[in-house]
Structures are given as structure tokens and as C-alpha cells.
Image (cartoon, rainbow, N blue to C red; front, top):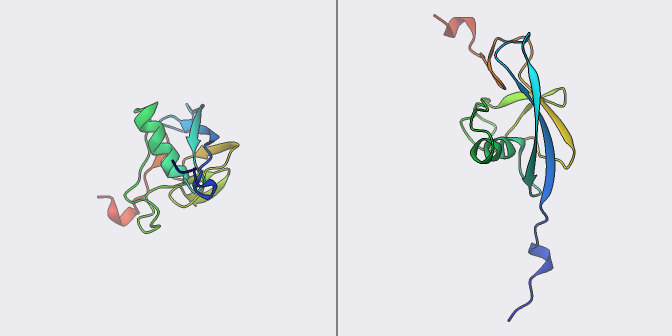
Length: 119
């Protein structure tokens, strides 16, 4: 029998995500969710875990994980524009909002198409 290697012990932490919900800026509200995570988990990891395990109705957009190439998961995280696949979960209250100045599709999804792409 071998002893567990303390260098490989992962400590599970909890982030409290305050997530903007709605289909337009006039009828929004926030829902709060506790999400378990380990060091290194991204906000996108937490949102996907939340959709799979707790609330499948949550609208989020992403195309890749941790690659920072598609820019689909861009949102406001604590008031700053960030990629959810890059921003790390932290053991505290984190506020997630859709991008400002763009039409809301639903929840954290905004219409990011340029005018040239819309026709």
C-alpha cells in the first residue's frame, strides 16, 4: 500500500457565479450558482459544468476550450471584458454579464456579427 502523494492532491474550491439572465436589457435579473472547481479551471469550465449539472437552460456560447482563438466566449467578468475560456475561477463571488453595447440573444450570449455579416 502506498501513501498518497501530497503534491498531487487537488483541493476542491467553490466559486459563486452571479449570472445575468434575460433576453433584453430591460428584463434582466441575476441568478447565483455555486460551482465546485479545482485550481486552473476556467470560467467557461464552470459555466459548462453548471449547464450540464444544474441548469441546462443557461445560454452560453463557445467553440473551443483554452485556445483563445474563436472569441465566442467573450463576456464581462467582474466588469471587465474577458474570454471565459482564459479567465480562471476564483473562490469568491464572480459577476458574469453579457457584452455591453451589443444586442442580447439570451443570457450571456450577444449578437457579435458585424453589419457586413448580417444580411
